[in-house]
Amino acid sequence: MTIKTAITPLTKRRDLLLFASSSLALAACGGGGGGGADARTTDLDYTKKAWFEGKLIDAAGAGISGALVYIPYKGTVYLANTDGEGKYNLQVAISDFAGLSTWIVKFFKEGFLPKFLTFNEPMAGATIYGLRTEEGRLTKLQANEFSSLNFASLFHIGDDKFTGSINSQLQTSSIGSSNKSTVFPWTADLDGKFKSAEVSLKIRGLNGATNTTKGFISLVGADNSTIGNSHILNYNSDSNGGYSDVVFSVALPKTIGVGALSVYHQTGGIPGDIDDVEYTGISVRLVP
Image (cartoon, rainbow, N blue to C red):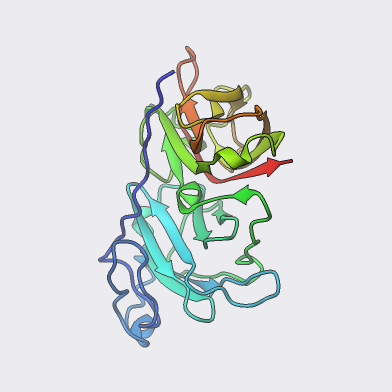
């Protein structure tokens, strides 16, 4: 089995990022957010733009600073950092999301599980998305639980041959038929300590009466060999094109080659199946 690696870059829409505080900084590619403390009062064309603002907190209710808040759009992303109190503020072009029935806002901070919010309606004029702190509450990673910025990305794999169903209105551009995301470097001292690995993710495909969108996902070692069995997944979504939670377990051998442990995902290859899917929010937990 040949595995192709593809990573969605976190490029930013420089012309459309505008923050309410000059203390907010862009996390990707360097640079500042532009605008000043009065930026939000000087650019209020709600027929063309929508505002997102809120606060990220931990389990104790404390603000989480330096977290990423981003909204993927095709090959780019609208991106902001939370400030010292966990607050964020950014705006997007409504036209970029006008054709989407379901779209997401992503949150990520190192050491926490990635999180996203789903919206099942198109952006409209005169809209401010004031997100509540309950929606922005992040959960810390537990012992032997792993995630990463790469895992928090929104991936679209497939051939872009849509059927016109509501789920074909995908938020990002396809990166090909497969994708490999590194979990962490496996070391020899970990051999024999864990019986299995539990992989979690959120995914959506095309909706329909029967499962017409299929593919497989697996855990692979540094030599690209599959660990345990590959898992065949049905990707059909609900009538709104929403995401489904997927959790599967992989039995771990006593010895795994030293090097990167990764999650590999491939779609297509089954005649008659529609292969375009989007997925995100991957995490892996090692079970003793």
